Amino acid sequence: MSDHVDRVLAQWADQVPGLDASSMGVFGRVKRLARIIEAEQRAVFGAHDLDAAAFDVLATLRRSPAPHRLTPADLMRSAMVTSGAITQRLDRLEARELVVRTRREGDGRSVYVSLTEAGRELIDRALVDHVDNQNRLLSGLTHEQRDRVADDLRGLLESLGDTDRHARRS
Image (cartoon, rainbow, N blue to C red; front, side, top):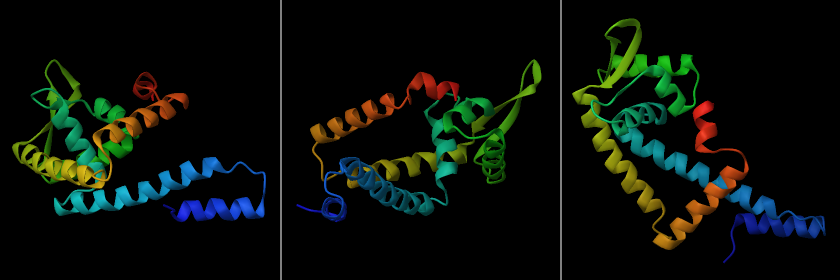
């Protein structure tokens, strides 16, 4: 079986013999895969009137322990975005009554962000469709292959310094 990336690698082998372009096989496929995944996710999120950023905030709140509330700083760390970006996301979600910001008792400077009932219902519906979509996209792999790909990608990320400890500091 051959794909577009194989054809590109063959062209490089013809044009620049001796060049080890095998890394292009990995990066080319990762890039093509990312484009497919992003398009598929946009369609699923769009069906729920969400974008990836809104889904990320709602999902982060939903997977946190009840009462599903976090500080904006916690959300910012989870989403790895700037404080301005998280503020814009929260403003849009609050305007749609999917989240609510409340002052923390005893510390009027601190704020909690919580899911509203409407926000929880929306993320629960969107999450089911999102996971179904991911499973559909991976249906060409066995569970053992999925585990192997996940392990290999984890190893690559760790080799590049992207560890859970590092992600929390970022």
